[in-house]
Structures are given as C-alpha cells and as structure tokens.
Length: 346
Image 1 (tube, one colour):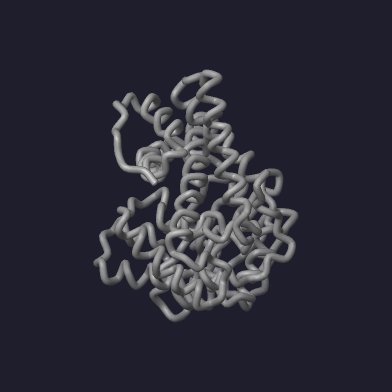
Image 2 (tube, rainbow, N blue to C red):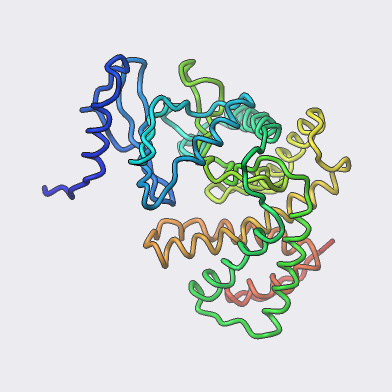
C-alpha cells in the first residue's frame, strides 16, 4: 500500500526530537488523534507522564497565539484546559497535556446511560459558568456588527449555493429585517468570554485523575467577548447531537440558576432569559447552516451535510414559536419543499 507523503509529520517528529529528554517522548508512538473544520490537526504520543497531544497548526493558515492567550484566560478562571508544555510558533506546533480519550460526543454516540449523561452535562453547565467569569482581556468584541456579518453566510451558502435559490426582493427585505432584529437584540446582551463552540465535540470526558476535573475544554482559540447566552445555545442546541425541547429546557433552567447564584448578568425572569437564549440559538444555527454548506461546497468536507437536518430542526423550533420570524419559516418551507404548518406563536 502506498502511503501519501506528509511532510508536516516529518517536521513534527524533528521538532519533538529537539525537546527536553526529561519529557520522555516516545516519538515512534505518534499517531493521529483528531482534526477539525480548520487546518489544525492533533496527534497523540506516549511520554514519561502519560500521553501528550501535539497541535499541528500550519502557520500559513493558522495562528497559535489566540489558543495560547485564551488557554491562559480559561486556566486562570479554573477551567480544565490543556497546559502548554512546549511551543514553536514559527512552525505552528504546540505540545499539550492530554485531557482524555473521549469527547462528550463520542460517549453520547456510544450510548452512555442517562444518569451518566446528566452528570456530565451538569458538570459542563458548571464549567460554563466559570468560563463566563473569566477575564476577556485582549479578546475581540462579538458585537452587533459582527453578528450581522456572520448571518450573511445563510443566504450566500445555504440558500444560494446549497439550494440554488435566488431570493426575490420581498423575501430578501424580510430576511434583512429579521437579521437586524436578531443581531441587535443579541448584540445588546451583557458581554462575557464566549467559547463559540461550547458543545459535545469540544468537551472531554476526564475519567482518570491525571486528566484533571471534568470536563476538559478544548478548541477555544476563536473565543470572543460577546453575548452571555451564546455558549448555552451552543450546548443545548448542539449541531452534532439532537436534544429535544424538554431536555434543552431542563439544562437551561439549571444553568440559569447557577448563573444567578454566581451573580452573572442573566435576566432575572426566566421567561426573558428563555427568549434571549432561543433567539441566540436561532442566530447561531442560521450561521451554522451557512458554515456547513460552505464546508461542503467550498472545502469538500461532505460529512457536515449529515448535521444540516438537525440544525434545520433547531432553526424551525425557534422560528415557529415567534410570529416575527414567520417570513423565515416560509423561506425554510420553500427550501425544504414543505407545506406551511399553522401553529401557536408568541
């Protein structure tokens, strides 16, 4: 069998050989651990203190400095994040502590018992409260303008490229009004540190003491200072895992109670908070529909198409509840070739 040459792996091995001998790196054990939607890859290898992780972030496409900066902010706030043992920014390489073998997503896919699931998610909610108590020093603002710009991924990539539909003027104007409402409402929320992908693929199950407290938090390099409901929306309307509304509501109430106890700036009335995080989830999931369509059509990553029906369902859940989003629901019905369903709205 002919293996495809991978010059970056040769570069990684050469770098690892240059690191202190007391790390006890078993370079021959280097093996792929995971990859993500960007150009970053992760490798695991054995070492004197157990397994370690190499982050491979080619500097022409990625920048390790935000990861290092946010790791510091989250670590200072008491989160279990990878510690950086060695770095070479010029080569785009970091040596990190390992936080475990399985993500929440992998455990969910394996069919863990509900009692264990609930324990994991209560731990995740407590970790989220700590995330939101972290300093936001040096983080860009996730403000109304940025939120509005991201929503354009939906008409460009999901509507136009994925479905091949050109919006008429009336529909586009209605969509613009909805986008302005969402981005201004969400952008007005109190700002905290926003992970941006605080969901099951980025939470590690830490079964062993050496991995630290549960959950381990990864993939935080895109963090911003933005709306306080954003990461809760990521968690309870997870693009990779379907959560029905009763479960969403249960976790949202538990989070809200924890956040209130921690004196975070959430709404004092749960009904107001519920609307705020639902509108945030609508904003996020419209963007994700565009992102997943772009990952498929532009980047050739077809696996993301499997998650589009789930994200579409989350979008519909909110759009059907509030009358102001009826034009969006009509557009979704056209895209999905559905007959409109009449229901109750607030």
